[in-house]
Structures are given as C-alpha cells and as structure tokens.
Length: 177
Ligand SMILES: Nc1ncnc2c1ncn2[C@@H]1O[C@H](COP(=O)(O)OP(=O)(O)O)[C@@H](O)[C@H]1O
Ligand SMILES: O=C(O)[C@H](O)[C@@H](O)[C@H](O)[C@H](O)COP(=O)(O)O
Image 1: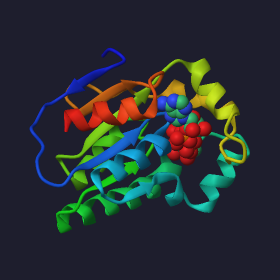
Image 2: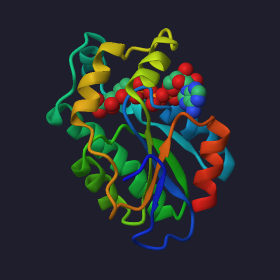
Image 3: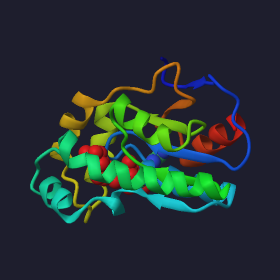
C-alpha cells in the first residue's frame, strides 16, 4: 500500500467510528482530537487506558508484549462496543500495531474504520524528541516499527502520509467518510 491510500471493503454509514493508529509519535493524539472535533463526537485517548504496569514498563524503555496489551485492547473494544450499541460516533487513538489487535477491535464494530498514520522514521523520531514530558521514550520507536503491520487492503480506512499538516490529514479523512 502506498503512503496515501483508501480502502473501502464495505460502505460505512451512520455515526462515524474511527481508530487513529500508528507507532508512538506518528500523530494519533493530534489527528484524533482534531477529527473528533470535526465530527463532534467524543475523542478517546487510548494511552489513558493502559494500566499503570504497562506505563511503568514503557517508561523504563521495555516494549509491551501481546499479554501486556490484551486487557488494554479489551477495554478499548468495550468502549467501541458501547458506542456502537448506543448508535454513537467516536474517535479513538490506539497504536493497533498488529492486524490481530485491529481484528479484536473490529469484533466490537465490524464497520470500524482505521486511519494509519505512516511516515519516515526520522521524522517520527524528531517529533518524539520534540514532545517533552511524555512517558514514551524515543528509544522504543524501533521496537514499535519492527512489529508494525500496516493497514491491509481488506481493512476499511486509509493510510496517510504524516509529512502533511494536521489540517490536511483531517480534511483527507473527512472527505473519505
Ligand atoms: N502532521 C503533523 N505535522 C506536524 N507535527 C505533528 C503532526 N502530527 C503530530 N505532530 C506533532 O508530533 C508530536 C507527536 O504527535 P502525537 O499526536 O503526540 O503522536 P502520538 O499520539 O501518535 O504519539 C506532537 O508534538 C505533535 O504536535
Ligand atoms: O501498544 C503499545 O506498545 C503502546 O500503545 C504504544 O504503541 C503507544 O504508542 C504508547 O502507549 C505510547 O503512547 P503514544 O503513542 O501516545 O506515544
């Protein structure tokens, strides 16, 4: 898939429910909050759902594993399922690095759409370094990139090039919706 592409395996309708995915520092929180504001739906910061043990691990420079992420993904799927059952929209920021993590989230809403924020490692690293006070050390970027499974052609959503400005990215997403 190219750095900017749209997947439309099924037509989505109704309240918009999106996950903004990508490695740490790719812009999930920035773009997610702006997108939620555009749609006038709640923005859920996925990082806020990590248990303290996960945050401690990442702060210490240790990558999370599948077991660490299991409860966190269940909690996020729960939020998606609740929004779906209420017929409400939401935008969630979640790294969702592996296909099976996204499959788990889609079990809560088969019409869930993903925006994969993708870009050059050096740009992402520079943005992480320019973001003081965050618990995630830039040293974990390479482990994130090594396990990242990009959004695949049968997954509804878009892959976008993060060299573009946030406003351009939000515009691109809303035009696809
Ligand atoms: N498209 C963009 N252009 C320029 N700077 C950006 C862009 N997206 C995010 N940033 C900046 O990069 C840093 C990381 O973004 P952030 O939203 O915290 O990423 P994530 O939530 O994926 O970790 C922040 O300082 C943010 O302001
Ligand atoms: O699955 C993971 O390993 C984490 O979710 C990770 O991908 C996430 O990036 C961190 O929580 C840091 O948060 P930021 O993405 O906001 O830097």
